[in-house]
Length: 220
Image 1 (cartoon, rainbow, N blue to C red):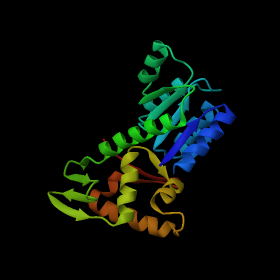
Image 2: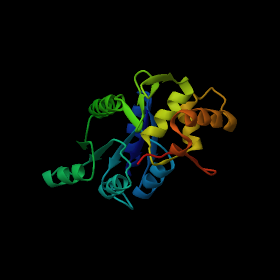
Image 3: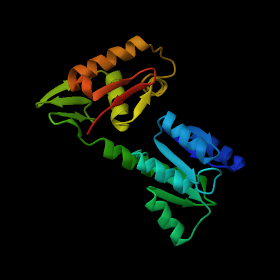
């Protein structure tokens, strides 16, 4: 699981990032709102961990902009702001959880795992792709006109990634990082083959090629 962590306190950032890395998370640290915004638009994350009072764009405004852009990545605010008005602002911006500083690292871990578990359950429901096509993410199969079609493991990972970021361009770099493990060789040709196979099932018009950037799953 990949986490974007926005925190301008370098010592705290290093402590939290090291702890979460030891727990098996891939943590990308940024120190101001502009960096965070750029990172989200360039990459894909499973969770956003956001401080509020940071340079450039503050956490509240940052998340509000992301939600307005239809980026629904789960988000937790970590902040010393503790009034009921601050809490209300955080949730109104689109936060999924809110943890007050100072916090225990284990409490943060519990909240992250609980939120990811909830998100995973949501993703494991039957996903509508088109009027006549559904994707069962538990069985890893497409259902087309009530006929079940099994996909190979790489096609499953690729389709899940594109569906998770529907109507967003997923870069080649993020696809390679998400679909291939670190010790596997990937290639443009193999990716094009998997895309071609998916298009045969769900339609070329639903998976767009963004020249020199990546691919986008389009859904009205």
